[in-house]
Amino acid sequence: MVCLGNICRSPLAEGILKSKLPSNKFSIDSAGTADYHIGDPPDPRSVDIAKKNQIDISHQRGRQFEVSDFDRFDIIYVMDNSNYLNIIHLARNKKDALKVKLILNELYANENMDVPDPYYGGSYGFKNVFEMLDEACNRIADTLLSEA
Ligand code: 4NP
Image (cartoon, rainbow, N blue to C red):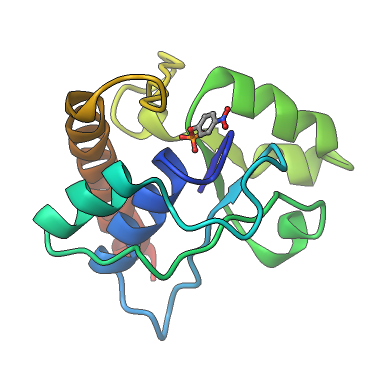
């Protein structure tokens, strides 16, 4: 799960998808394209909305996406089109590039919609993002479990 800062959207996406899949079968992590928040905990507004939905993301710490993540993961979900371009730029070959997917395309195929960045807004933005990611992760989990 990748966003810009790895403190708002992708920590939520990581926590939500982890809550839907068995940890002994799936390795799920998140990262930012930027280095602004390396080592930082998630934004308190993300921690709060997760907690309201019985998900604890408070232990997560920010990290920056690394090229080696293409080797560690089969699918790289990005939150928006800007993240997509940043990650595609790091792809070493077609195999890497094919791993990168916009997360909302799981719900709205080929529409290339963004999960809006809630960082500069109020808490409603975080509720909205939580709901979008929860729906997208339901679809992802269903697909992965049916393939497993
Ligand atoms: P995120 O949100 O990409 O969902 O984690 C942001 C967090 C921090 C910043 C931008 C977006 N920032 O500019 O520090």
